Length: 94
Image (tube, rainbow, N blue to C red; front, side, top):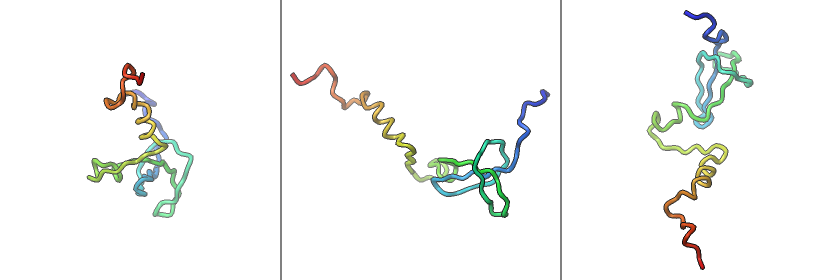
């Protein structure tokens, strides 16, 4: 096997889903600047998540829209010109 293919900085990390306010502790090498005190009283690096299995509709069975930074509005504005309800340019009011 090749040497030095896997990172050597595996450690315990807390992943927190901010849309459902749930968190879980696991081993990871994900970079993080934030820390959090876990239920055992120890401090661990914190990785913030927008969506996880705690809030994803596939796992929860509930539909929930998470609009972070206006992404839905940005998408709708960007692709509004392709809508089949929009008026074609050739049919302008003369």
